[in-house]
Image 1 (cartoon, rainbow, N blue to C red):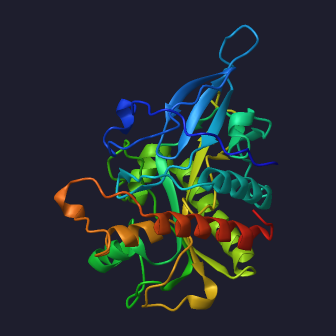
Image 2: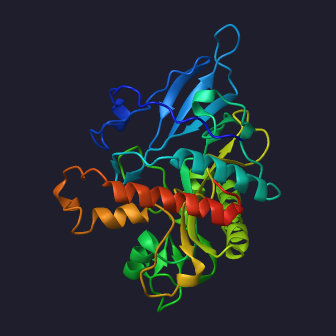
Image 3: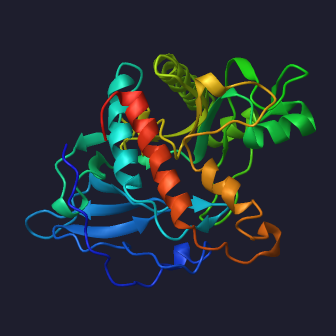
Amino acid sequence: MTLPTPLPTPPERAVPDRLRRWQAVRVTDLPLDLPGYEHVYSGKVRDLYAPLDATGEVVPDQLLLVASNRLSAYDWMMSPEIPDKGAVLTRLSLWWFDQLRDLVPNHVVSTDVPDAVAGRAVLVRKLDMLKVEAIARAYLTGGGLEEYRDKGSVSGVALPEGLVDGSKLHEPVFTPTTKAPVGEHDLPMSPDEVDAELGADVAAEVSRLTRAILARGNEIAAERGILIADTKVEFGVAPDGSGGLVLADEVLTPDSSRFWPAELWEPGHPRPSYDKQFVRDWLTSSESGWDRKAGGPPPELPAHVVEQTRAKYVEAYERLTGEAF
């Protein structure tokens, strides 16, 4: 798959209402004018377009999934965007879909997409998405660590005493959250809440697959010097109810997972990562001068943060796949 020629910056567009709660920043690619496609939705990172048939009617069972270069942190859209981020997410997801093919089917139909989004878009099956964020943890950190310190458990899963930031868990645990509207926080869900939302049988399969994906991911990543601390995956089902769960959206990318250099892992100590934690750390540093609790928007990312963030995404891709980006 070839990467697109860099496109000129399009004129500033109004931010859709669903995005206004993030930040009044310049968003340069919402939506793109793609002949043969109709824009239907924009999320934090991805935009969805419906393909049109020869008569101009929407193709009912497919969508064009476009990964942008946008980056969000602390429920704010960052500015400027991160060059090549969308291409890294797309190419890495496609690589992982191949590694996971025997575990679960995925939604990819084709990588034959319009030139304007080549390298960062895929044509996918249209699915009914489950209303649960499927999260698994192999190491304790982030929000899971905060909940553990408060309750001794994460999403109703009791964990051993004495764990610290970065502790490896005996086996991956399923710690789902709600799928909150854009601009709102996801909330931890207990096993009973997930059963009520999905049904006990589907909930059990979502748990099994999420944990299996993280375990497989760590088997492969460990050989390449990377630990995957946790990950979020998305599942859908065919609208007619046929077939089982289908893996959708992205998988095991720096946006959906925490990647740590294996050689620097030591429980109880801060560690660098290959994900947007680098941006979060800068935002909360004295250098940014931003008071997160004050409610105002964060400052623009300086060039060195943008460049280093891009480098981290690219390094994750190259270390995992063994391919030059």
